[in-house]
Amino acid sequence: MTTRVKSGLRISDQGMVFDPSTGESFTLNPIGLAILKLMVEGADEDRIFEIMSKDYQITEAEFDRYFVDFISVLKSCQLLENDA
Amino acid sequence: MLEKLTIAVSGLNNTDNPGPGVPVIRGLRESTIFAPRILGIAYENLEPGVYMEGVADKVYLIPYPSQGMEPVLARLEAIHQQDPIDVLIPNFDSELLPLIRSENQLNKLGIHTFLPTIAQYEERLKSNLPEFGKKYDIQVPRSQPLSAAMEIPKLCREIPGPWMIKGKFYDAILAHNVEQAVAAFYKISAQWGLPVVIQQFIQGTELNVVALGDGHGKTIGAVPMRKLYITDKGKAWSGITIADKYLLELTTHIISKTSWRGGMELEMIRSTDQKYYLVEINPRIPAWVYLAVGAGQNLPEALVQLALGREQEPFTSFKVGKMFIRYSYDLIVDAETHQSFAIKGEK
Image (tube, rainbow over all chains, first blue to last red; front, side, top):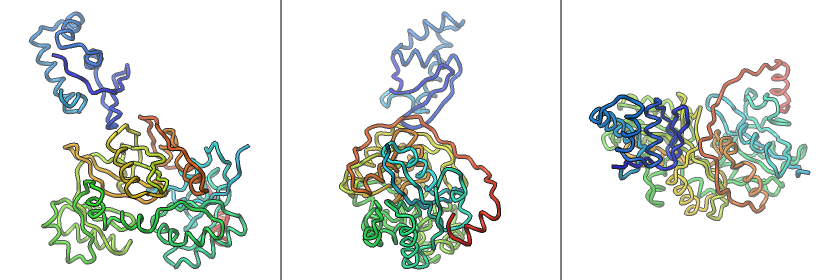
């Protein structure tokens, strides 16, 4: 499943995310930043797991749990497209 | 070579509740069309802009309009004879209406202004905001003008709390119960007179738009800003430009429907459920206008062009993500300088 990130977000390499439509800013840790960048590139959940599992020792079940949490945080921060 | 223009600007009170004079002047000084000679217009001899380096070339004290317009116009005429004024940009809410009414007299003297009409000014008064919202199909918080404290308990039952108690020109106090609302009513009415407005408090993000209308329905420029840091007086101490399509559409809608003439500020709240409420329209350029200049829209310069009856192309874009951060700074001034200004009325 592909979750669409709101278009126009400005994401810095240091992990700052600026939403130009609301003026809100957020900070991400390096893992969050890597995942968000993959999402912006259009990677789906399977692809993100594939990449993350190469860099981190993580099972699919663990990834699922953290990914769902991360998506709900993005949603509560209104960083996903409305229909996502 | 840039054209020389003499522009008189009031609102030099760069305090914690700042007037727009100094930022307007900063915008004018960055003009690529004219080289302004700035005459500062001050009502109080301790307005910081009087003493700031590089702000005004000359400063004149004038009497408050509350003392009647005759002394004000007489003073402006005397200044004009000494230092001919091309354009006057008033920046205080309390001086706007008397100066709008004096526009013809000022024009006869050769002093140009670019102010809203009396109808435009009155239509958007805080006490008329519910009708304004209804007329132009804009969501506004429930509000009601108050002329006596005894009306408050009944209104507090009708309008869901908490409430903002607002002065007709300035000031707003948040009240969580009837006692607080009554105390706020007396405090504000003592300072700003009646009516006082009671308004439903909307929890959310404070967003503002600075805009300029050409008087024929065209929006010359508009820049939305989200407040990042708010003082205890509710003033933005820091803000960031945002690309909020709805705010820009709303601004264009208001300017188009009202044929707004001059600078304006829309004060909006975006509630937690993403609804937008218009809480106030200020009929002048706001104190954070220099953010718009920094983001690519020199609205003070454009206002001068319009005041002189010249064509001004609308701005089509601005930089998103530009921030302003206000600061305070201690000026060191010789007592003689202050005394001389207070006595002579000019500096």
